[in-house]
Each structure stands twice: as structure tokens, then as C-alpha cells.
Length: 337
Image (cartoon, rainbow, N blue to C red; front, side, top):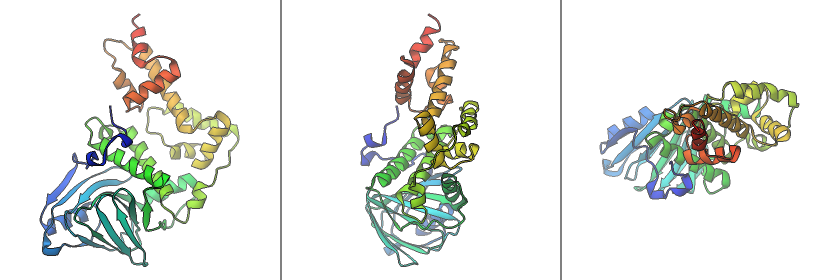
């Protein structure tokens, strides 16, 4: 069973060790590796003495990596033009400034920074600093926001430099990114579950949009206006036909020709639940149907659950029992009774 983010102590946080890029004490090797994975930059370290660790992996929506220098490192980075970088500090501290005069200090598990694609940034690391860093293409994040707002977004999101990770939205952002990293590290975890991985990537981007302050924040948090009940028909039909695929609120909103906020408002008004809760009930129904026609000698509940997007086995079993009044293994046993 995978551990929940709140159950894992800081010292046990994942470092993406299954995805090593480089461990080195050579300054030029360190600079080249971070340039290759993230962005071009100048790196200076007193006496050129460091012990850098970089682990990272990329998928459809963004790159996630773990980085430490074990030195007083200074990085000077020109504008990336096409990516946002989200630096979440897990240990130590960093001091950052950017070309518009913005300054920010990050401390372990309480704050981070967002490096914008149109700003030059300088970041100074303490020797004990460690970060999880997201590299998110402009297209990914701005399209994600546009789907929430149901209108085009064609400008840089002017995030405030610092991100407070102690607010409800900020703490959820940190927890979701750490959970993502741990699950990627875990054999049999997200790295082998494309449906769950894509859903969690979308969730991380949603949390970033809510945790960081930018020019669209007020529009993003404004309540959506529900639409006519008939507009839900195509969405629910799409859920039924594609329940085994990595559906997201953004994709469902596109099907219904509405914003994500309006999608949520309409589901709540008409069905009294969120669209993802409704999708979960549909998937649970598919799981039950498959178990009822399965051979108890050859069918594994875990395999069926994973096929329908349930990768937390204990949580899945609880949700199944709440819906059907029995555990999934009891449904399977009943087939031969």
C-alpha cells in the first residue's frame, strides 16, 4: 500500500532515485547536466567544490526533478522564453532575485519560487539546500488555465516571485508534488500507471495556479455559473465510453463546451457531486461488472482495479465497500458460490 503524503516524515521524502541524471563533484559536469534537463545558466561555487545530485524524469505535461549542490552555489539564468520553473525547497534555503527587481527567500517546506519565462533570475543556494523542481512548458500551463477559464490565454502568467507553501493551497501543492515524486520512485507506482500519472500531473498544475498569485487568480477562483442540465448528457456519455482512459476535468469540460468551473458548478447543482466523483462511481461499476464475470482462480482484484484507474488499493477497497456494501474480493468469491 502506498503511503499518504501526510504519513511520510521529511527525512523519508523521495528524491526520484529511480531516475538518476548525474551525481558529480565536477563543476562543468554539474552545469551541463542542469542545462540539459532544465535551462541554460551560469554556475559558480566557491573553490569549485560541490557534490551535486540531479535526478529527473519528464512526461507529457512537465519535467520533475530533485536537485542539491551541497555547496554555496550561485545560478544566474537568462529568460527561458518557453517554460516556467517552480522551485520547491525541501531543505536549507535559497535567496533569489529577478530582473524586474523582485526578491524572494525560500526556506525548507515553507516557501518556493516561480521563475518566469520572460525574467532573468539569480538564485543562491545554501550548502544544505534541496529542491524539487518542476519545468512546465508555457503551452502546458497556459492551456491548462485556459481550459479552467474557457477562454484563450496567450500571455505570460505573471506569478508573484515567492510561493507561500504554508497556505492551504500552497501546502497542497507541496504535498501533491512530493506524493508524485514518491509514487514515481515506488516500484509499481505512477511510473507504470499512465492514467493515474496524467491525472496527478493535471492536479499539480491546478494547485500551482491556485497557490501562486497571478493576473488570472480572481477569475480562476470566481464561482462558475451552471448551465442547462441537458449539457451534461454528452459529458456523462463520454465518461461512460472512456472510463478506462486518463480523463481530466479539462477534457470533460471541452466535451461539454464549458469551462472547468462551470462543469463543477453544473455537476454540483444537477447531481450533487463533482464530475470526478461521478467518474469514480462509473469506474467502480465497471470494476464490479468485471469481477462478477471473472474467474476467481484467474482474476486478481488488484489487476482489475488498476485497469480502471484505482492505484491506492486500500482506498479503492473502502470506496468499493461504501458503494456496494461488500469488499471487492467478496464480490469475486461470490461468483463461484
